Image (cartoon, rainbow over all chains, first blue to last red; front, side, top):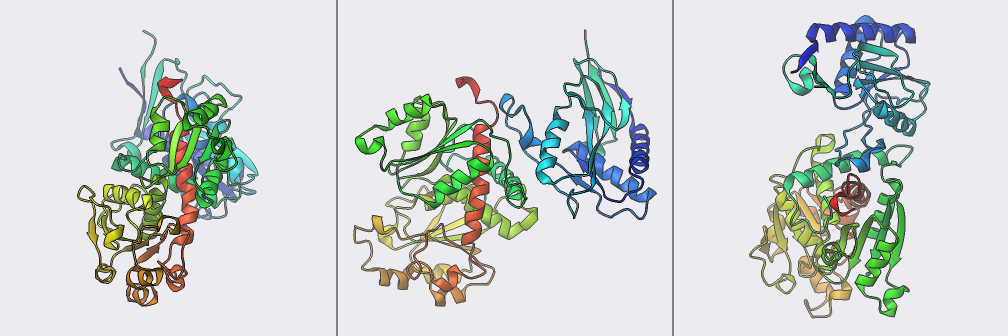
Length: 181
Length: 317
């Protein structure tokens, strides 16, 4: 049975807090780039960028972009063929800027590891931070998120589903299902 | 996708998926670091039994930009000139651990034999076989048409309703065959124009119409005019009286070119015979996509190699 762990309001509050935290740690929105990892990370990055622009009207108009990591994954020959998504950078690229990577769920950390490789081919960021909506544990790499929507300790056998209006239709929600029987 | 042997068997969604991946590959060509680590550790063999420069270097660039190791094999000066069979060559490649084989061969069907005979496990890409098919050329032509028509909004789109006129030696052209199948799968309307001697005997099963008068075909204001190369090496059968007559009747000369709408794309798979099938004015105009076709060729071939060589290679291993 799927159990809802975050509803629409919870997600919106978490993203608002993350937006504030990003601005606080970056001391404003100068030289900030928010890059989402497709598919749902891109949507979250766009929402966080909108929130930042609401909080700091002086922030650049184009703050958000997307970073596709498909071609950099370490499991390409172990799974079926994956379709890549476009990478779109805000004007000016990432050189000398602070990049905040955004993903929906942080699990093994392998996606983020591939994101580091993808980023280094695009330029040299001043610093790279990580924001995730859900951190479910079970890391396989020394990677930790700087901004976390919700820590959700889970069993490896459980599934975490993030559903966002822009991608999936319906209301935003995060559910957890399955688990050890 | 296990092999890419022809466009005839390619489904519409498969073709569009490949073109969409090529869009992402094209984006890589504009970056400072034009390389992806995707096929690291894989070996791609370019097996060329026929002379080719542009297709071979295009495949070589594509494989290298995906970080694969590339081995070039050309029949000239190799063991083939000493009489080695395709089977023995294939088994040598198998023993060397080739993951992908890009093959060009003068015999129609050689790539099919290589892919289905069980001699090798590698994925096979047909880079032109006899007068049969040249699928990556058709894919790069479709990609070029799509990006000229839709620009950044190309993803997911076919070529529905696009009217394409293909002119020249249809009889010997694998480029024409691959384009006929692919373009019609993508929804385009294809008209073939050629001297009657250079049209295959039976085109009844082809999803294309055949015409013999170039001026009539151009008067319909097509969206794309694709000129094929007159291949001097295949012109031993007196298909037309002489090259000047061919140029006058079936060549895209300055007069015919100036009658075309400025939105009509002029395509040529290269290498061009300027003054024979295409005039310099047409070839160098803004409507000409010749150089885009070359650049897009690398992106499309990267997409094909990605589809063939990434992912589980399946049951065979």
